Image (tube, rainbow, N blue to C red; front, side, top):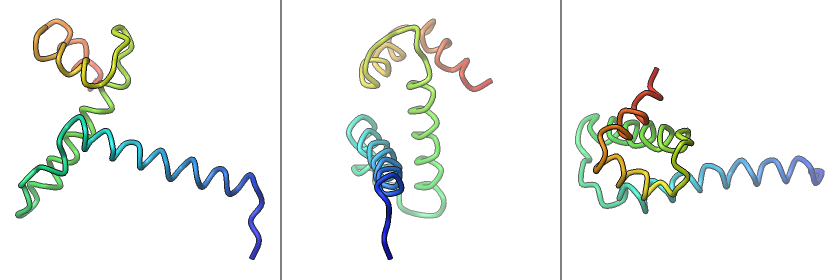
Length: 88
């Protein structure tokens, strides 16, 4: 079976997009350090972290890393409201 270059490129990019998300969830949100393993708690927390990451990434009024956006949310309720408005 042969694969053309375009198909291989698309598959590689798709894979690294997922890996990039998991790396950010681990480094910025400490996902691998979580001790929630029982019942549905672990799955629920994973989904919440993914939602938070998506909201922080989609908020463009403050150009900064996810880490800095999280810190700003913790310090400024107005900015937190802006980020949470992404839920609508």
